Structures are given as structure tokens and as C-alpha cells.
Length: 277
Image (cartoon, rainbow, N blue to C red; front, top):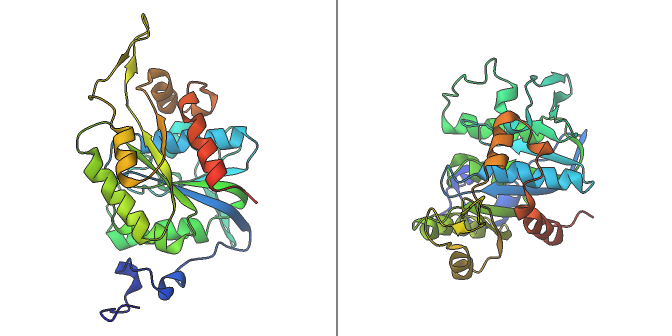
């Protein structure tokens, strides 16, 4: 423990033994084997799309899969899966909603009366809600849980990394020039929290012409290999701007979309780095 420690672990990222005491257990009706957090240094890079697609691939391979939507102020997971019914519960806890193929989902949009109701809460309240999604939801037996994180390195990511036993993270980014700096923040936070980085996915990497198949770099040349090498992490995938996949998210039919092969290697990396025992 640092000599300057003020014993307030909720605002600390030091790797001392006291931090291990902050890990929360799930309830007695839940057994989550592996937890993968999908993170980004900034918003608007397609993190929720990557989270949803990885979860769909996991379920297709026969793993019991769940998604914890930790993006409290901007939840989008229910919409991607077409989940509209509200969450229910009993004296033992809250039951997650289930998608068409059986993926368990918990999101704030499943608890508020209207999907468009704004969440005007202070940071500690938002972080506490995410923690309750882990402790109070009756997840059942889950092989892989994917956590759709809010962008940045604020209260919620800190709460997730300190309170939930995250086994690895996937970083999502885009090709813009600022990417290196933004990815660096996510990488350094993961290192400070002693959480393994599985790799990085570059979304909106290019668009492919329907006529000639030429790849057009709308946002400039890909920085994926350069950034991955800079921070010593694995480049998992380059995802193009794919109208069919985006449309499937908007329509709530992402489970039916077959245009997601770019993340095949990414899920294989998750499966290899964090195998279910």
C-alpha cells in the first residue's frame, strides 16, 4: 500500500492488496465463468456493435452468453437485439431479458419506463447501478459475459475494473489521427488495473465498393498495426463500414446478420486468451 494512501479505494487505481477486496461476488443463482470488457477511449467508434457481434459469435459457437450493458447514459444493446420487454424480478433478484437466440441482456433501458427517458444521475449513482447489474441480476450459468463499457476512463470503467473480475479487455478504435493517444489512455488504465488486453479492433477502417471491390479509406490509412505495435498489443480485426450490419443493429436483428465475418479472428482470440474451463 502506498504511503500516501487515503484508504479511499473507490477513487484509487493502485495495484495494492486492498484492491482485491473490492471484487464483488454474484448472487447465489449466478455463475459467470469469464468476463470480457469491450472498451474505447472515445465515443462513436462502434463499441456496442463490436460487443453485440462478439456475443452473437460466442452464442453461435455453443457458449452460454450474456451482455451487461454498462453504458448507463447511452444504452444501445437492447435495440441491437430487438429486446423491448422490461426486466422482471422477484425477492431473489432481477432476471435479465433474453434475445431470440438466448443471450442474456441487462441494460438500464430494460428498467426505465420509456427508452428515450434521459438518465440524469451523478457518477457514483451510475457506477453503483452497474455494480448492481453484476450482483443483483440472476444471470444463471454463463460461459462468456461481455460488458459494453461507456467511453473513457471515468467512474464506471473504474468501478467495473475494481468490482467485477474482468478476465480481459478488447479495445475498439477508429482510424483517425488522434487514435494513438486515445488508445494509449485505455491501454494504460488496463495496465494500472492489472487487466490483460486481448487486442484491438479498428472499426470503420474502410468501405468497399460494390462494383469493383476496391477498398476506400474514408478516414485515412489504417493505423491499426502501427498503434498495436506501439503499445505491444495484438491487432484483432479491421472492420469496414458495413451498411448491412449497421442496418441490422438499427432493426434489432443483429443475431440474424451474417455480415460479421471480420470479427471471427477477434472472437477466436478471446476464446484462446480466455478459455472457458
